[in-house]
Length: 147
Image (cartoon, rainbow, N blue to C red; front, side, top):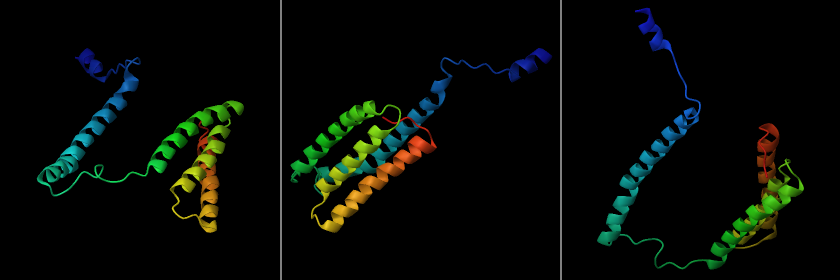
């Protein structure tokens, strides 16, 4: 009787696969939430499009090509330059900091419809403060290695 009771209390952990336990749960939760979103929002919308009550927002509208392709180009340059600048200052996060300041400022300028002195100064302040705060919290407080 005693051996049966102790076998119920024994725990064996397979350390080769134990780290996959929670990611599998998270993947299934995300998959279920995705299906719920499809059922609740997408299918009724597509049925309304089929009935002619709504139109697809992508078709028939003009596209701001400058901002679309400018955003893609800035994002590509951002990741490339983060690596380049990060290699100049290894393990400091300065690549993230310096490139993020320029990236946020240029994105702000690109999406600014009317450029006034006040808006440009606000964008510049935001471009310095937001990445600096993120860099300080991640690199200094939590000691996360940034590029």
